Amino acid sequence: MTALLVTVVLVAGALGALARYLVTRNPARSPWTVLIVNVAGSLIAGLAVGLTGAGVLPVEARLALVTGFAGGLTTFSTLSVETVQLFLTNRWRSAVASMAANLILGLTASALGWLIGLALFG
Amino acid sequence: MSLIAVLIGGALGTGLRLLVDLGLPHGGVAFPIGTLLVNVVGSFVLAVLVARVWPAVPVWLRAGLGPGLLGSFTTFSALAISAVELTSLGAGWMAALYVVVSLAGGLAAAALGLKFGRQPTPIGPNE
Image (cartoon, rainbow over all chains, first blue to last red; front, side, top):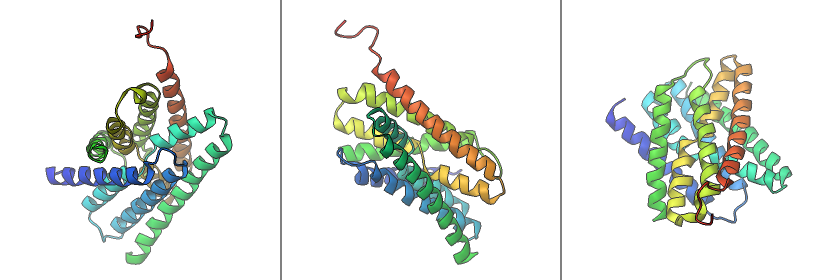
């Protein structure tokens, strides 16, 4: 890996984190705002992997978009901690619904993005 | 100030995750152990910070460490796309195992971290 590529990945990750912060920073927000960034990032990662698989994007772009931007945009730690906090405050219905929605919509978005990337240019 | 802290934390978190990826590479039909490790460790550390450190630090530092560093150290998109790739390669069982272990591990780590963070310190200011 070149120093330039590492820099690009780090900057992309920082921008992803900033975008996530702007969407989720309201302290009174519901857990559903994490769902938005996780589904959006999963779609972007799927598209990038699909386009790389189709030969449209170079492997370096995949690294910048998947490890960098989508990795920075999405989060797992906030999801885990917020879900446990929902359980601890007896809002178990919201906890289960939030986790299920992240999983189902996130995996579906990744699969769709990947298929679209492959189908458009494959 | 908070926005700059998030950018710096985001770059550091992404860099740490990249290091783990390079140290524990995976591809094809291989269990994504690096991402699992990152997500479980990150969930534990964030929970400890939320329970122990947040009440004592300024907002910009919370933003830099929480949404910045740990938010971008951990990842959901890598979990999703790895599960899709494993399934497309015929390893649906491994994808299912990966998702279940990630969820169970992340939730257990977060619960432990919150509990650990709330333990009274051995030599506290009020003791």
